[in-house]
Image (cartoon, rainbow, N blue to C red; front, side, top):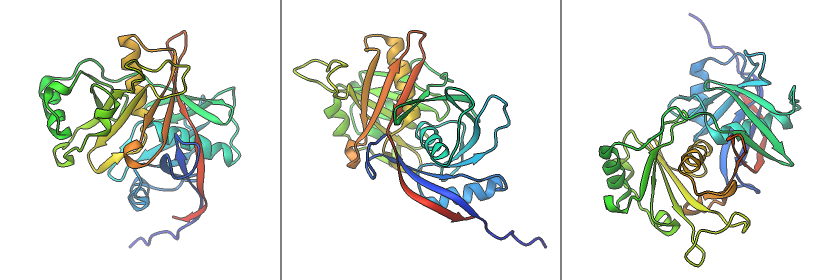
Length: 290
């Protein structure tokens, strides 16, 4: 009979991501030394933290990466996720990590992700979409039922899948998004993103106004509502850029319905690279026995 190994003290951080102060963004747990943890132990720890994601820092296997991260929800592992990318990068930097080059290079199951610093803010380069294009009508109808709205209220729809499998629907405006009272039992296996434009005097606010361009909400199986979602916002930005009519730089709001103040910075470079960024704030720092 093999006895379980004794737990070790491991550096641990909990952060708020896409926020400028604690308790207003999306929380993330980071285990900074996960080298000898098994898949089962990582999954068990992720269930225990009871957050949408928990990440585990490892030595890179790709010579071009500064570190490797594994990202777990309470039910499984993700190849990529946005707020875990920024939060893990912040925890790694604060623990003394130093990138080999100008940018931080994160290795994850989705490949190598570039992370850049802009003062005290971080941003990741949106990974390529695994699936794009309009949704099937059967999915649009299912999403409308889950959201509790008529099918006719859906103004646009698209896949925005860069790993997690997001499907996005567009409503008439931000007020419609914030008024949603979804039936989460009807979400089933769907990961649903919803966006609606903020209006000012009947028009979308200019990118120089500092106001959010649109409001986002995210619903997925296994949790009620995600406060602020980097991967979804990256997919939405790629959809909107491909569609045209957006400025080269803007801010999206998310979490308002949950009393959060999530703000996602989006910047489109001349070469088409889309950067998704925001604030990262450490809320808990210490060790965990695992």
